[in-house]
Amino acid sequence: GTCDDSACPPVYREGGTYAMDDAVAVPTPALVYECDDAARCNSSPPPPPGEPDAGTGWGLVGGCGRGDGCPAAHDPGGAYAVGDRVAAGPAASEDSSAAAGWEDGAPP
Image (cartoon, rainbow, N blue to C red):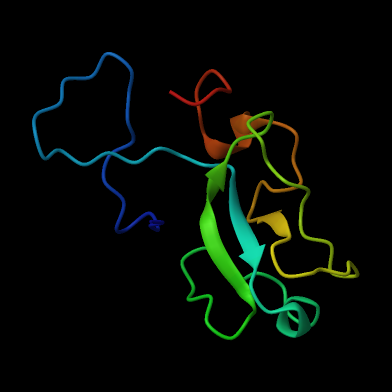
């Protein structure tokens, strides 16, 4: 799932020490949504991170990093069909995973 700063566990760090049941967050520069209702997808953008997706026509699929199979960023003027996927969120249109806060610009 997704979380905001107040509800996120600590960010995963390579070389960190973890025990069973420890939770970690892995920053994701963009969220991936899939169109499940063409009429709604073409009239509503994907919801902001952490907001419910009900009623927008977009279902949250997961996250992606640049160069890691991200679909194109959501285009407000685009025409979408059921099954189309878009990237949305603060870094969806940026071409760098550094925007996600990764120290070396790459996921852990």
